[in-house]
Every structure is written in C-alpha cells, then in structure tokens.
Image (cartoon, rainbow, N blue to C red; front, top):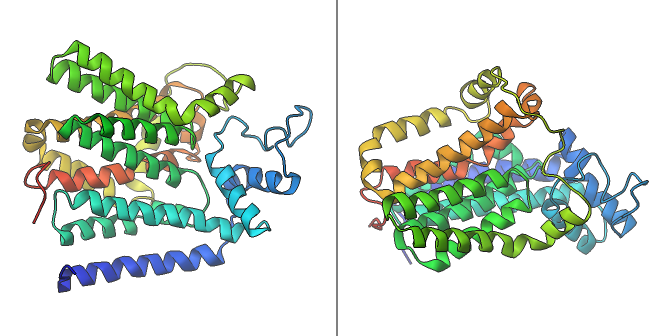
Length: 354
C-alpha cells in the first residue's frame, strides 16, 4: 500500500466533501433547465414511453421529437438505456449519469498528472477542477457538455501520449475518442479538426516528413470514423445537419464582449481562466522547448479559436449574445486546460514524478 501523507489526506477529504455535496444535488434536484427538458431528457422519455424510434416526419416524436433532431444521440440513448433497465422513467436517476462522468474526469485527471507530478500536486489540481462552479453544476444537470468534456479529455490525453511516444495505438485511441465525442455533440467537430491540425504540425513542421503527415493524418481520420460511421450514415439518410440554425456568414464583433464576460466575469469558472493564462505566460520558455507541451497548448488554443469563430462568423452568434450556449461550450475545454496547466509546471513532460 502506498503511503498517504497528511497533505494528500487533507486534499482528498476536500475532494470528497465536494463529491458529497454533488451527490446531494444529484439525488434531490430533478432536471429544470430548458435544454435538458427540451432535448437531453425529452428524447429518452419519448423513446421510453413509445418503445421505438418514430420515423414519421408528420409526428412531433419524429426521430425522438423535440426541436433538436440534429443533435447526436449518445446522451439520450444512454439515458434511455438506464430507464429501460430500471423499468421506469426516473429523471433523478438520470442525474447519476453525469455524476459518473464527472467522477471519471476526476480520476483521469489524477492518473494522467501522476505521469508528471507528485500525488499531492495531482490531487490539488483535481480538487481545483472540482471547485469550478460550471462543471459542478453540470455534474447533476443532465446536459451533454460534461460528457463531451470527458471524451475530449480522453482524446487529448492519448493525443499527448502520441506526441511524446509516436505509438500508433495512442493515435488510434485518440481518434476513437474524438469519434465518440462527435456522437455526443456536433461541436466536437471543431476539436477533432484541432487534433488533426496538431498532428499535421508535428509531422510537417517539426519532423518535416510529408509521408508521415499523410499516414498519421489518414490513420487518425479513419480512427475517428471507426465508432462514428453508424451515426454518419443515420445523418445522411435522414438529412440531418450539424447545426440547428440556418446558413449564413457574417462578422459579429459584439460576440467578443460576451466571450470576455463568459471567461472572466460570469460566475462560471471563478478565476480559472486567469490561472490558465498565467500558467501559459509563466512557462512559455519551457513550453517552446518541449514539443509535446507546445503542441498541447496549440491544441487548446485551436479549440478555443474554433469555438470563437463559430460564434463570431455564423448564425450561432445569437447563442453567445444571450449566453445560452457559450459558457457551456467552454466547459468542454476545462479538463484539458487543467492537465495542460499542471503539466506545464512539471520539471519535464514525459518524466514521471517521484
């Protein structure tokens, strides 16, 4: 049995306190928010009571019903599976799904960081994540954004391992989890493209190997499709798009104000994004010298710029102006930002801590 010192015990207890409060909210607060009621819990309710997928376009229950038939099905299907096994529709039980994903994120953060940092420091960063208001809220409120952040974290960790080891199995796992993320939310397309961009930068600019870039990029793309092809076939067959808004491009400069407020002023992330920026600036010399760290940070930056472009240039801007989606989209990036911030303070990426 590994020895647990006083500092580790204190931080672990603080994490358990957070989880205890979270469990109380999970078991006592049914879904009350619009998107949860209109989509993430609506579709499994329709599937449960109809016990089928309705393919009649004239029916409101068409493809599960609701106003978001373009949304991927992973989250509703998982809820339906739970209710089918329970034998009843119980939305409080449905809250447990997000709780399990939240706990899984805590575990992944810890074990990833243990490759580079001590147990105490790893636990401190796990605790910091557990204190952030928006992830905590989503852990008992059944949106898909926390689930997306779980798959994005897994995809990133394996991508980071590939940047360090160049093992194909790491790239395969990263692509598969990006594919899983695309079955959770369409926004994951931005993150998958960011991953491909990092792979190409590594192969073309750093390693200067065109053949490697083609092989790695193609292998990664096929890995994404591997778990996703049934959903892609379904989307093509029923003419489902990647967005619920109409086409149209235009620059909406006012969105920058909303992005700034979402990151630094709204009570969603405390001072976390300030800490991320400080970490980046404080370690910029180290990051420039270590390719895996540099490309990891570029991945996070590309993801952020992709989300910003979505709201700045398309009709999605309205969801940034009223902040119905912007903060939730940023939620997906938090676990990745946690591990990058932590690893940037490690003595050297790739070297396990004592």
